[in-house]
Length: 273
Length: 343
Image (cartoon, rainbow over all chains, first blue to last red; front, side):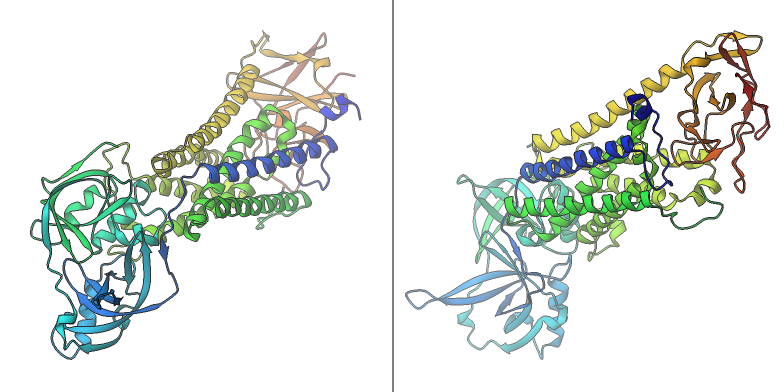
């Protein structure tokens, strides 16, 4: 076929066979697209900053036993063994609800199943899903009120240390307010702008806001953000979630938890990265 | 062409086209997952799903937007245009997975309805940098949804080609919204020059192709019209190839003059189906055949062969000393005009 004839080739979609010169170009186009696909898939994978090794054991229900503490935020203190002197060792596991909710409403439902007195006077066994990263562990009460598997009244209160917050001093932190459930495993990434809406939804639902601040060692410190008297200020911090911020307040320690008490009206400052 | 509506008028070419789309989409997803699992072993399945479908839909959208100008620049790319709607609907399906999963992932199981959460969680509507990027993506999806839902010829005929075309031109608004969705969303976290560069190359390619195609069309449309007794010069007879046409634009009226079997006929240049450029078509089996979807018209009266009912305006022609002239006043659609014989 001459070049002139090839030039006159005309494609009609409903005719079974396309002219040779046209099908040849179409095939060549498909090959180019195939190469483009390989390049795009590869370059995007290379260009991404990577993902942390946080874990959400989705679909895997675990059992944890310990004592529930309701302050500074609901958590389960779990005995993990004994030190060389025979003193008990503990792990503080933050409790959170199913979905984008804090644990309080679930714990209230659980409390209503108990015979008498408050939930924090029992040693309980709970079913739920573990979330963990960077030394912090959370436990999602996946089954709601059915998360309570077993309970018994605490008789030897001395086995369970007090969790009263101790004031350390004043502190200024720079970093980002996140929701711990997503940050420590449920989402990747669980921080910054792409995750802002989800974090706002989680914190609105009662999951305690956490401040993630880089320390001088280049690792991260985590603080539960609370009001000046230790009250929840979830609603007040929503506007700052996932933005770079500077917090000024009092640093406290309660068991394994670091806390920052602040006045949300004056102690949170939005900063530029 | 069909006289009744059917879901899809399958033919060999369409099947091949759709198989190619499916294979390439699967290849992309497999490669995306493979590369990421290899380079980022800690990536979560959710992140893989959200990002693989997002990037695949965006890649498909780039190809969709490139096909139009490519076919204008080189008509050999017309097979890609013929089934572009199938590519569009495929892109919509991939985007749907991204949108539905993202709404479930980021907005459901909370203390407000997921759609309320989408609009009301991030309230920095007064800020450019902090603007709620997910809302932009959602509006882009609504446009793509409308386009996919009205992609069938049933809607083309019932909405009229003008309204349908206007609706489908919103794809450019959707593209702009998606670019902003990416730039104000994931790019603010990733910040990789590689990713930003890829997005820029994609945009530049689309813009350049459209500019080149527009320049080509503009050059053809702005030829000086030489008039003689109400007739306007079209071309020298010898410059019109057999079974092909020359297009002349007179006062924004585009006319295609066809040369076939020793005769000349002129019809309005826009196909009744999707305003396809009939002048870039060819006479096949005695009928003008549209290059876009193969709609056919008889050259002497502009009528589609029976049982089809589409009709075009026809025009008077004159031949003088080997030069072809056309009277730009259109005859009513479907008016028979005796073809001008030149042999």
